[in-house]
Image 1: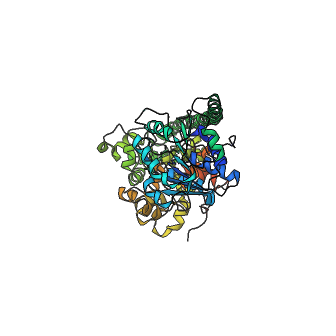
Image 2: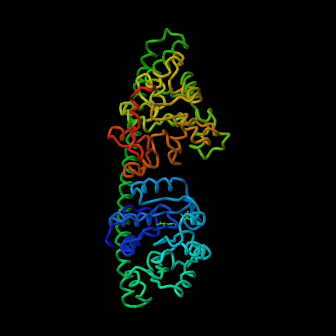
Length: 516
Ligand SMILES: C[S@@+](CC[C@H](N)C(=O)[O-])C[C@H]1O[C@@H](n2cnc3c(N)ncnc32)[C@H](O)[C@@H]1O
């Protein structure tokens, strides 16, 4: 059993004890195994996996607040949700109790626990309290394993308790991976445990056992190190590719722009030659018309023409613009600043238009050198293009045709009135559900879709009842590692490849279908 690979490798200071966890389960065949302190679940799932491999009926119970502590650090619900999703795979073998250790103890009968793993907070007082609280619950065959017995820094005090226990019980200690102590607390310990604890502290046999488990453990952590290095390499290659892609797009844009401008100058010269009879205002109108048709900005400092300016103003999201420009004081992040600085630099006024995505899925626009924001507002929507991966312009237009004023863009309608009325940007994003589930977003006044695209996904928020952001990232770690928004990833690749969108194997409704 000691050669069994652990089922999942999560961040943990316990990695190298995986082989011993498997041996321990085989040596004790416990009816009930309880763990105090599970975090991402590495040790817990090492126990569960051994139970499965051996075909035992053991009940494994993980107890944790899943909030963290001063030693492990504090963390969010995503950790609990991840552990729950893996635990599901072990059926009735694995039970989770989300509460404090002292609150859970009443759930166990005296003399019922065969293996107890203590790995909570590591102050001396914690170590003593956890041990003493659970001691009456240990069976006659009971074995306690406790982590961090050799750690002496950062206020760790398990080692002091360990020294005391060595005088009271038969014990064995591993010193690698922060140390793991084995205590035979029951007077009728399983035979294999008896053999282990009788090896003494520093006998040649004890050293041999320690060396063997340390080497087996290092095989796992070493392989994991290699895997992480490979992951980093892949992520780096993906980042380089994206950088290259963006650089190419910018170069294409610049080249296209230059050509367009040359053509425009040539046309202007011709107009000047031919239009001597036009009045100056008619002449200017003619020029503007041509420039607009080509999607090119005026070269002078007049900024966007009025229609474009109105569109930009309706979409302008000051909070988003301020976040893009940390160098500005909040009151400086105004629409005027955007028009004078952001717009000429091809920045988007809103997270709802994603220039990088737009140019990537519309290579003809990138090749023509027309800025994404301008192209979408002038041509994009009428050509059934979308401003980001989640907003489906044509679908939205069909759903709300009767509300749209002549010439009004679906995106503008959504960003100004539609989102307040709870409209969805596409069947893949559920606005009302999102705001109900995350009232802090509703309170912030953000458009729900903007929130998800900006940092909602990073915070583990779900865009739709059938789409589990954290699960999707975990299930597609190789694809999402480069930081792609998981829903954007799903709509761009996952949907076509029939990826599931949550642990229950759901598939998000096909966004090309009509809503009821
Ligand atoms: C060191 S981590 C556990 C590591 C885990 N065994 C592994 O394999 O990686 C400690 C965990 O104990 C939990 N914890 C600490 N004190 C606790 C208490 N009194 N009640 C419940 N959970 C507690 C923390 O939330 C944290 O997740």
